[in-house]
Image 1 (spheres, rainbow, N blue to C red):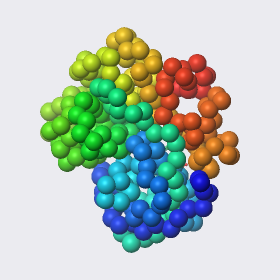
Image 2 (cartoon, rainbow, N blue to C red; image 1 turned 60 degrees about the vertical axis):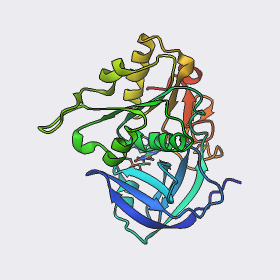
Image 3 (cartoon, helix red, strand yellow; image 1 turned 90 degrees about the vertical axis):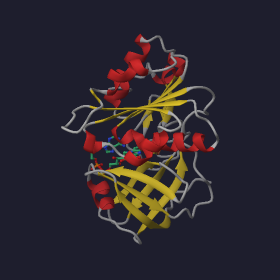
Image 4 (cartoon, rainbow, N blue to C red; image 1 turned 30 degrees about the vertical axis):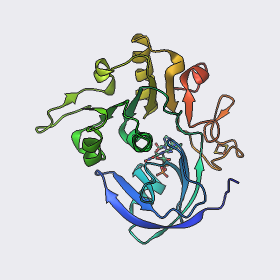
Length: 258
Ligand SMILES: Cc1cc2nc3c(=O)[nH]c(=O)nc-3n(C[C@H](O)[C@H](O)[C@H](O)COP(=O)(O)OP(=O)(O)OC[C@H]3O[C@@H](n4cnc5c(N)ncnc54)[C@H](O)[C@@H]3O)c2cc1C
Ligand code: FES
């Protein structure tokens, strides 16, 4: 039964990923384990509640949060031992891993991609490719984990703007699409809408079927499970029918990629 009441949960640890991204490892007191691509509502007392994707649930519930406004700013001020309220997991999550899958992640889209990669690696799947775009080298999150994944799956990183030390590709994520191994793969895109829009355009040029493209959508939310009507796109609720949608299902809805 989905609930509007947050469960008090202790912060086990806080990790500084970049200048504006922190990861929070929380106790897992909830009855239900998540699936990759699902999200939780995180309640910061006195500030408000925000939807955040699960990044990992190996050692507790791990969330990585970019500081963008009021609630995320207050969350960034919290430390080990402090109490948050959480409820969830919500949403449909990513499709099952059934064949070669290309994850295309932009910016803070990497945490949800992590949930997928970690989950399917733990099940022995290796046929995945990750194309990750960050703004600058110092905005790259999970550096150690990216290195570890590259022992098992094909990982490519690009930055919009390099620096003196950066030896990798410079350019938006679509500039590394020539490295896509298999155009018959499933494609999961997670990131800002503008990045998803251009990624879809380029994939279509490569001949990828619209039925094999999945997008993780973001909208302002309140309840998180389909009762308040705050998060709709067309006739779908992003919280309940999504956040992950097959592109072919939502492509004609005017407010997608508005
Ligand atoms: C299903 C889902 C999963 C998410 N997962 C993550 C995650 O793993 N990590 C993470 O850092 N963020 C994630 N977000 C985004 C996060 O919820 C927002 O950044 C947060 O709600 C902002 O709250 P705020 O009070 O700090 O900012 P506000 O003061 O509310 O807003 C600051 C700025 O961010 C924009 N904004 C606020 N909420 C959203 C939103 N939902 N989508 C797009 N723009 C928004 C506002 O328009 C404004 O420009 C997710 C959102 C959804 C819907
Ligand atoms: S957030 Fe309430 S219906 Fe989606």
